[in-house]
Length: 85
Image 1 (cartoon, rainbow, N blue to C red):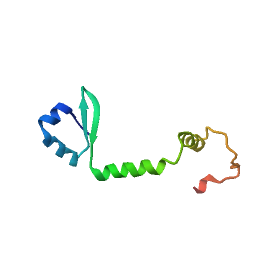
Image 2: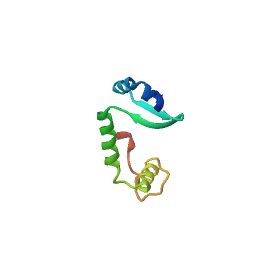
Image 3: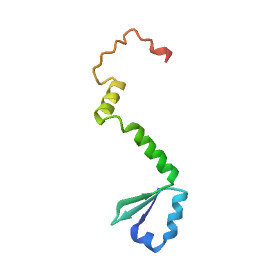
């Protein structure tokens, strides 16, 4: 990702064309301010976010814990043959 200051962007608007090749991070006072990216990439990010938005943070956290075995669960998997997975 490219990085430029807001003042540099004002001076040289042609830098926006770089966003066609790579994302562009615009900074203000050396801190991230705005990201310019390809619209299709933005839509993909939004769609992914929308797909996961129905899950609460707690549900996502618990799913991760169950997946790695850190949470108690009611699953009886002692006889499960994981070698076939």
